[in-house]
Length: 303
Image (cartoon, rainbow, N blue to C red; front, top):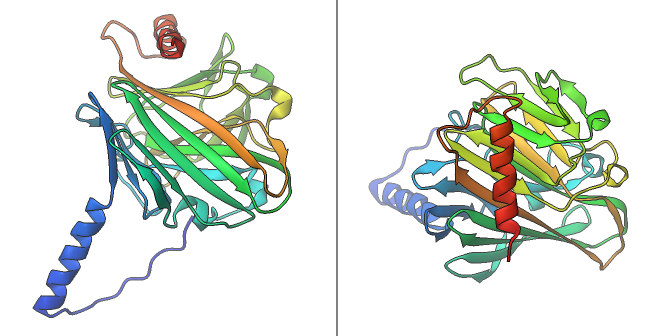
């Protein structure tokens, strides 16, 4: 986590106050907004090129009830975490990114080199229910092992689930009240439940991680990773619950590989967002929810 910001008491003259208000407005207007139909995405190029909003209609899947510090939105890190330990590399996570291309439905931007790598992001809104997030890592040094890692914070009052290789499921931090049923990992959460920190990692068998909340299904679809291709100490699916704020991290990773100086690692995650039919029961083990989820992935994969 970033170090806490210090607080100061300042007194401004009227002209200074006007200038400050103008600056705050300008920063808000610096958000890049993409949209098509009822789907819209906002990014902040001044804060790590971070995705700060994911809306279907008037519902924002990334809106947290108690945002705090640096833990909000969707960001990107290098994997395994042993490459940088903690906190995340600012140039990849929270420092300004430069925009190289921008349109109504697409934006490309890149950070600066740090920890031996530079991160590029391209976000494309494809349709009223789908977007694509493309990442590229440029290597400035040799990496014997490296993978791409997408981290998205969502409110912790829904149901996360994914098909997994059962023997790869591990709680690596705190406590996680997940359930395993027929090779599906389920993590149900109740609004206003006591906050308990925990993290579970796993190998996904179908290349997707889903989250159902507020009547919406949010899907991350990514290239499948074999158990032996996961970064050391990591999973290609990871779920982290904060013990301090009411949010869940939905994390997916690429296969790990060797990356030499001057080489690049390209990786893509498709985001799908759909309203869930009222007759589908949202509970662990729901066959109807699994069927609906797989149908959306199949439909999105068609030319």
